[in-house]
Amino acid sequence: MAQQMSSTSSMDCVLNLRPPLVAGPDFVSVIQELYGADEYGSLVFEKCLPSERDRNYLYRKRDHSSGASGSRVVFKISNQGDSLQLLSAQTQVILHCGNAGAPVQRVLSKIKAQESDMAATSTTKAAHACFPHQDYLTPLLLEKDTVAIATKENNATRSDSSAPPAGTARNTFWARLLTFVEGDVLSAVPPTTEIWKEAGRAVARVSDSLCDFYQKCKDMNDVAAELHDGGKNTTFQWWSRLNEDFEWNLLTYERTITKYLPSITDEAKRKFVENLVQQHGKRWRQRPELVLAHGDPNDNNLVVTREGEVVVLDFGDLCASFPFADASVGAAYAPSEECAKAFVNGCMEKSTSLTKENDPDMIEERIHAWAKIRRATSVCISSYQAQQHPDDEYLQCSADQMWRTLGFQSEGK
Image 1 (cartoon, one colour):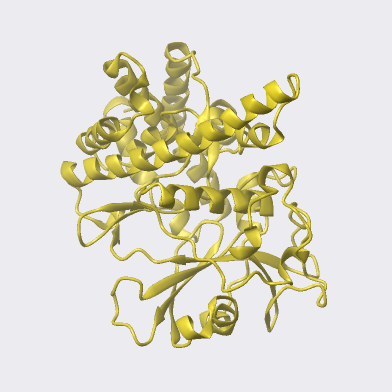
Image 2 (cartoon, rainbow, N blue to C red):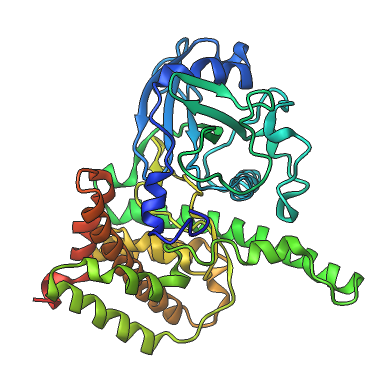
């Protein structure tokens, strides 16, 4: 989520503002209209993919064999709380990473910019005024028995960058089409240090590409300051604060853990997390300069292809964060200490942004320390979500592993 939506928990808002579950075949004609009947005339719905806050519909071209490269696509319907500004940012960096050769999913452009899209004369504010978001993003009207492209005529366009409140009469949601990466998510692959090291290399390539994008924005900001006698470029100002209050961002760990810690009803576990956070705060007070981070390269957002390559998915948690954030987050989801070390080694081997410091041992220690903080954040939020949504197994998919890799069984009992 890009922001706190109300006085209620943002975790609640993530789920309450999810798009309604629509029958997959209902989107076929929309995809054909937007992306071309010649290319997608034989599209067949396969299934909905698991997701926490949005909806992802998987389709296959009927005239392609199952599993063939390029034969399947994902129609992603975003959470109603995700602004056009944020979605444009995500799309922009996916394109940048792809053009730089980083291993990411591809976002597909429409056959033409739709006149109806976002009342085309609107902008996405300073951060993306020049980015052609209408080539990639489409507002959809999703109501009972209605699936349509939002237009001025049906009064469903959202010309501003803020999301309407849940439950409005006109429920519009932004949609994109992406390639489906053939393979298995890392969590479903038998864990080996080799594959986790390869995952670390892939995440490092994406992180470096994001750092490069961020640096270019910063350089433009410095030029603007010189040209305008100290004036600042609002584009960089926006990127430098992107999702800085997001509860999954490592920047906010103290506030997030404090907020959700009471949801851990087991006193021993709660004390364990309290002690871990206290010790971390004493050891790691110094905060490095922020960069742009993927935010969530967990083992369900990393796909291992048939060729053994790893591709990074889902930029939904894109944020300004620490240079080591993605390495720490990825390591946090490793199933064992050995795999976590392999992941970090892969990151350090491939990354140029991580290794700017002179002491590699200090870098590695910091990454692992913040990986523990990510695990602590995860178990706190998972405990809260388990209370609020006990029937949603996806929200609990990593909780048991997190407690184990945190070391609770050996240290907390």
